Image 1 (tube, rainbow, N blue to C red):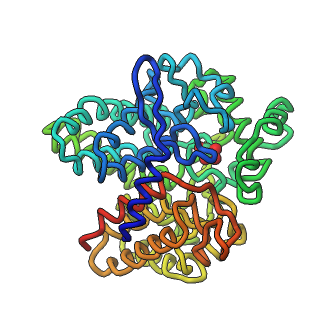
Image 2 (spheres, helix red, strand yellow):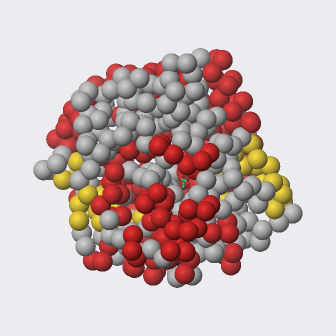
Length: 458
Ligand code: DGY
């Protein structure tokens, strides 16, 4: 950890602060990056709070208060909470048809993102020193998170399998991962109305503000917006969506975080003396832990997502970083763990100079620069580091090595969205003109602060 970088991380988070008055109330939000992501994103914000809490407890709580401010009556905490004064991002509020679910002036998208919020809440609860702020968390944020978990349980796991269903690649957080190629093939381009394609052609902005070669492809965007169009047409009826969406997947990464988030709520409620509620969330976590084990595929040696559209149950055998997530959830046995650690340490797959690439280097679909199809992302590194941290002493050297390479990649380049797993570069410096992702990125900054503080004693 370097002090100058720590200061720069804080400055980036300060620069990305967005204050807005809605429904007569002031909100403080941190946008992921002013270059493109100018609203508030769900799992980004949960991460921002985990870093903010080390230097501004008030702002960390405000970040979560602002994140829950647009919660729907049914409990949904959306992927995006919009800033009404911003237009840079596509698809903005006018493309979702979610107005009737808005909390007064607070408009959101209609899908969610990986449920990191409960994990962030527990971290704040355990870290905050100010007693009144801690009370505020319990009184205001905890009930919203409980309601959000009830939404996920009721609408995304109606069959009570322990595994939540993800209905849009944007919900998975890892938008264009190679894991979604197969399930997205369920949607044929001919099914997509021309009006949707015209909209994308006209308004898509990520490929203009960023490097189009590094962003998801055009076909992907047609499909992303087709799903939004369908759900909006169905009035955001979540029962219908989970039954009829052409993209319905049991996602390993999403469910590993769901498992951890339920453990987190159980722990917080236990500490608050709310034993019965704690037991409920503990049971949910344990159920998911068991169900995650069923996603293990011995043949491929991978945790596999399941395509469950139209009554199918197809294992998606893609070698990506998601396969390491169940370690954090504690969903493994000894032989699975051994094989996962061998895979992680293999330089032909994941142990490049700057691990952990989001897709295995020897996966034929690996792309060095394209968003979630190759680059190393600090957020997925955080998940792997936390997973290793929960293992025995023999794994701690590996954890520390990954931690130090993650720091180096950020220290050498700055707070970019993601990095080149081979040379650690981002952009835009003389050494490297790849331009990886957007710059002055909040969660890279927050992760730097979080990891530096959490692991400074080890
Ligand atoms: C985007 O638009 O790139 C986001 O990842 C969606 O959440």
